[in-house]
Length: 355
Ligand SMILES: Cc1ncc(COP(=O)(O)O)c(C=O)c1O
Image (cartoon, rainbow, N blue to C red; front, side, top):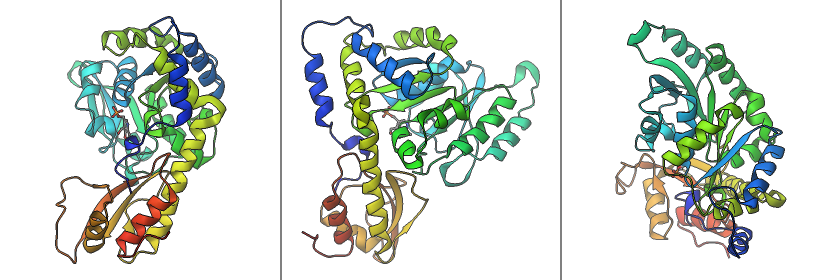
């Protein structure tokens, strides 16, 4: 009953096997390994983007911060939602790697940026010459940090506003696979065809040991990205172990199967919660992540049964009045089992888990 995060999960066997195979003998270092050629070719094919530049790093924060730095000058603004991971959870890495770009909030409902609010914000950012921060780029997240999902049409609407101001668009895809399989569209439809210029393609939350790809659809930015990655200390010398993970994840569509599994587990959770009196969802579920309100008494029972999840926001006390409620985040992963979900639902209601 482990729902704290999808990155609390382990690594599927095909990825571990691929690491063991990659361990044999010698291979060129720093990304010149043949497995990286395979990964690059595979991602270009998948995204129908034969010119795209593809790079691997080990964390989502590095992917986001380096992607932003490559597309936004230090004196400009990155427009994002107030709950964006780049705003709340990266310890200033975007500001650090861009050399000081300012994160500017654009509101919207359910964790999504609102296109009209973006248009208003950009229209209001009239230049007073050298004195104000310039307009830099737009950063979106899919799945969002609220567990909701943008459709390609919604991304395209936001990109059109950005484009009207000459701004590039970044997509934080830490849970891109979950969004993609839920939406049932192609990778191209969710990215460059919808106006996305650079994607952080998350692998770690969806089964990898620690690899994210940065996919840059405008290859003229590629060399700058390479220099920034090296200078930032994120170019791995034994790069083949990053490539091997990503190659195994892509092979035979494993990445989509893992994401479908996680989404299905979250769907089961959602359906089960609907039958638990006093619970509610804070946002519509977009993929593998739910934000729910639980009666305090049910929360106490689930905790006593050993269920793991985070109160959300974090600063809510674990203990509160018995007749109150608590809001929590529940994340399913590629290896969440139906009995984990059923056991949690039973515990909330003070029942024994079904066998
Ligand atoms: C939306 C989002 N972006 C990026 C990341 C990647 O962060 P990390 O640097 O922890 O891999 C996360 C992980 O929590 C995330 O939820």
